[in-house]
Structure formats: structure tokens, C-alpha cells
Length: 299
Image 1 (cartoon, rainbow, N blue to C red):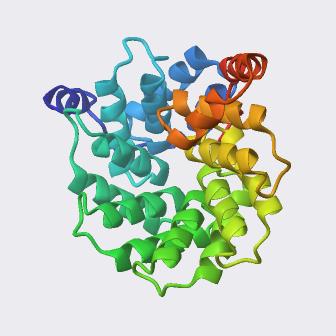
Image 2: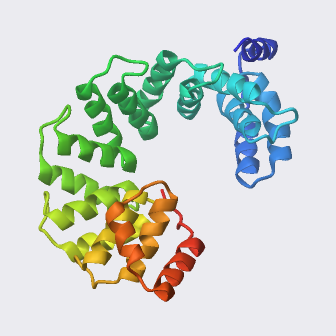
Image 3: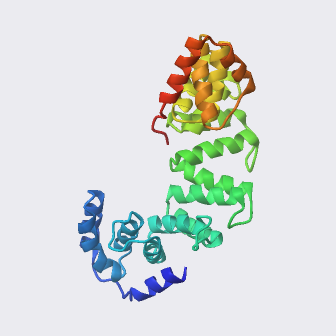
């Protein structure tokens, strides 16, 4: 923390002149992956106090693309841009401050910067502030405040906030317990491709919680979440396949998903028994398919 503070003090910031064009050019170079050019263009306006140029410098340091780039350097530049009122920098500075086990960790200050960015309309900041209130790390724990900020983020289209708000409605935390509204929100997040939401919505469809019961639809959502690496979805898909629930019974495919989930740390004694009952040929095929499996891209 002292190193970062010393670095920030050494920058000798003055009142920023009109450096907007240089900052724009630096952003363009950064977006194109021309990091040397971005650094060249951003350094002067950043040192003069331009917050957008300072944010470019922060991201260059964070990516290890600035000469002598360090985490302390990124922290110092994020702080400068955040103190100048840049919402994206306030969010990213807050994330640095909330990182557990680092010298800069300061949950209370992180929450302050999340709120500064959220009040400027940044949905990701409102989402993170909702998480702060739900966990009580940096602010007093409050499900009502968590729900309030998640609603703000969800209204701005933040998918993780939509999902988490659905979970709050499912459990009745900070909002009325409403399984239909929970299913609507979780389904929206699932449709956007969020693996955890796909799993939850799949279970809802299989059990009829908040939606019409349709095990076949539920299995489709479980497949999608399982393919993205959700180990609980992999386990539940294996169970559905082993019992022919919502899908044609297929013990070899069930064994494959069971082995994938087990490799991820989720055991299941019932599926272990099914695996033991397979023929040597079927078991070898399931093991080979499990070994070759790789997760798809996920949110």
C-alpha cells in the first residue's frame, strides 16, 4: 500500500489541460492491442490528470503491458482515475480494494467506490454493491439493501444481478418470496447463457417450481449448464440419464457425465453403483469420453 501511495504521489498531477484527443487516441490504440502506442499516447495526459488516460495507464499496468508494469502501478493509476470521478476506474479500483489477501484490501473503501460508480449508472458497480450488502463485507449486512442495488443493476441489464435477484425472490430474502417471479428472472439469465441460471432453471422446469413442469425442457437446460462446466448440473444430468427422466435412458452417457462431475469434485454413490454395473466395453467408452471432455465457453 505504501509503495502504491508513493508512486501516486510521485506523479505530481496538475490541473488537466485539454487532452481529450490524446486520451481518445490512447483508448483506440489500447483497443487494437497496440499497447506501446497506447502507453506513449496516454502517459502525458495521465500525468496531467486526465482520468480516461489514467485508466488506460492502469489497464496497461494491470495487463503487464506498461514498462515496469506492476500491480502497485495499476493500483496507483486506478486510484487517480477513480478520484477524478471516472466510473469505470471507480469500479475497477473497488475490485482491487476488495481482493482478499492483498496489501490493498479495504472492503469499506471498496464499497464506497462501488457506490460512487453505481450512482453514475454503472450496472456492474451496482451489482458488486449488492454483493457487498448480501455478504456484509464492507457494509452492514442487509438483504433489503442487497435487493435494492441488484434491482438497479438488473434494470440496466446486468445478467448476474438478474439471476441473483431471482434467487432472492426464490428464498424470500430482502424481497417477497415469489417463485413465479424467481423463475422469470432466473429464466431470463439462463436465456442469456449464465450457466448457474441454466442449472437452476433446469431444476425448476423438472420440478414445476414457478413454471410448468416439463422434465424434457429441464434436461435441455441441464445439458447446457453441464457443457459449460457446472458440476452440479453434470451430476443431475447423469441422474436423469441413468433413470430416463425427461430423456431416453442412456447409462453410458450418464456414466460419462458422472465421471466428469466426479473429476470436478462431486461424488455420487448411487451413480458409482451404476458405473460398476456397466460392461467393460461400455465403461471404457464412458471413461474415454469423460477424459476427452472439455467445457464450452461460459459466462
